[in-house]
Amino acid sequence: MKSLNALQPLGLLLLRMALGVIFMSHGYPILAHRMSATHALFAQHGLPGYFVYVSGVLELFGGGLLLLGLFTRGAALLLAAEMVFLMSKVYAPHSYLAVNEYAYPLVVAAACFALATTGAGLISVDYPLFESGGKSRAPRNAKPGK
Image 1 (cartoon, rainbow, N blue to C red):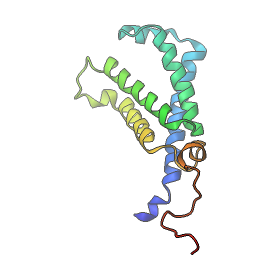
Image 2 (cartoon, one colour):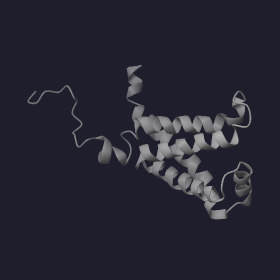
Image 3 (cartoon, rainbow, N blue to C red):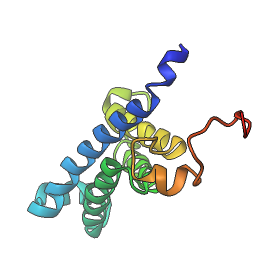
Image 4 (tube, helix red, strand yellow):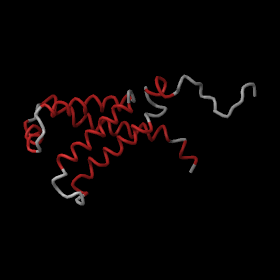
């Protein structure tokens, strides 16, 4: 299974890209079209009207940051928190045992949390800026002069 470790940068890239596309495709219509159905849904669950725009901005720009791999840990953590918050507001009145009702936001929240804890990976803007530590790619066990 060590051979799969070599694919970890590709796996993180694909996860970031999938989540970025998902969030951007949900955030853009909220901001561009000002859908009254979304406002009604949020109001129905007791959320203030401005939260629709907060959610739209967070999803559109947070998804874009995930696509780029820039500030990935922060963006992913905010998006995971948003999903958990929305699950608690929308699905809490129902049964927690009805997993089929909230499976999608649960998986998205878990994937965002995984990105927040692991980072963007080698194929990202974050890596040279924040995660490489300015070190060369030489193995950690390599001794100088050999």
